[in-house]
Every structure is written in C-alpha cells, then in structure tokens.
Image: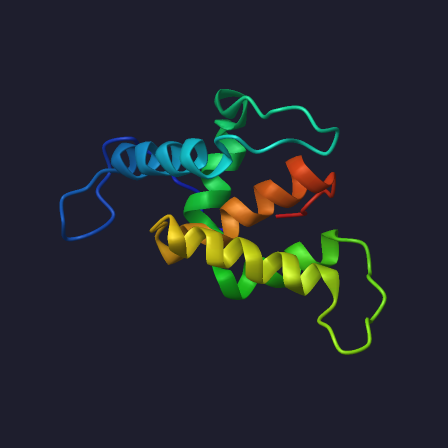
Length: 126
C-alpha cells in the first residue's frame, strides 16, 4: 500500500494536493458510515473512524489487493445450496451501496475493509 506523505504534494495533473485527497477520504468515510452500527449494535461515531490508518486504507487499498485481504479477515462461511456464501453476498451488497452513494471506485475497498473491521469485528491486515 502506497503511503501519502506531504500535505502539499500534488499527485496528479489536476493540481489536487494530498490534503485534498485526504479530505475526500474523510468525506466518504463520514458518508458511508453515517447511521451504521458496530459489531455490538451501537451507532458508529464517524469522527472516531477518521484515523490516519483508515484514511490511508481508503486512499491506497485498491480492489484487486483489497478483496483478498478482506476475505482473509472474514471467518470462512459454509457454502449454502443454491446461494452465494454470506461473505460474498456481503461484499456485493457493500459494493452496491458504494455505487448508489456515488463513492469513487478507488475508495471502495478501503471503506469495505474498515466496515469489516468495525461492523464485523474482523482485523484486516493491510
């Protein structure tokens, strides 16, 4: 996972700074987790999720590398006759939710990794 260092460093041709991207990550973390509950049923305080690690996950964990890490973190589910395993259904549900919220695709894996940690109690080693 690529780390972001300087708040004023531009990382593209649009003139957006690292701070701009970090602000976007904060925005999407707040939006995605608004109204969600943690693994114990308590509403999540989105401000507590705005750690440097979580911001880095959202900005740097791509879908190709993120999905295997997320699946490894989740307990293995039994196969269900005629249905997808629960972990795959959850992943598809969360990806669909991200799409409905117009969350940029590069941010989806990081948000789902945070979700798995906070809402399902599984540690993602990223």
